[in-house]
Length: 137
Image (cartoon, rainbow, N blue to C red):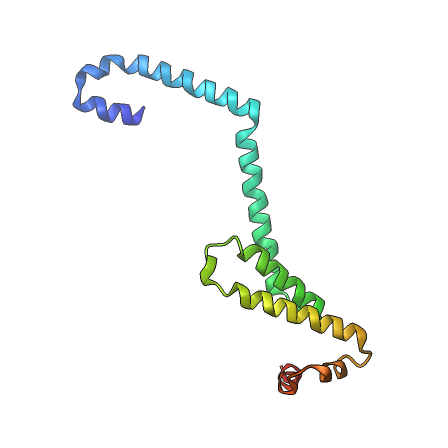
């Protein structure tokens, strides 16, 4: 109605129609409210926004926590790849590199399972310098 009043200020002939326009708008709003209640649009939209906010808080907590194992690091990479793949960064973000790091972590986890000492199985890797870099990291 505020917009109608602004328009009517320049066209006095519309002022006589204000009550009719208000009644039509109230009826339209009532139909909208009835349909909204019937299909649950507003409630669903609110719940979706709340779930999204919860997801963002949980993701922030996950990335703020220190990984205490390769499994924890792997989980963080999984979440980063899953959440980020749909994000705004798109093709400009280093997705192939992140996926490669995730595969490396999975491979190291597998090696660790097969090696009681944890690191000696890495000696079978083709790049001994890479092993030294990983141990030093």
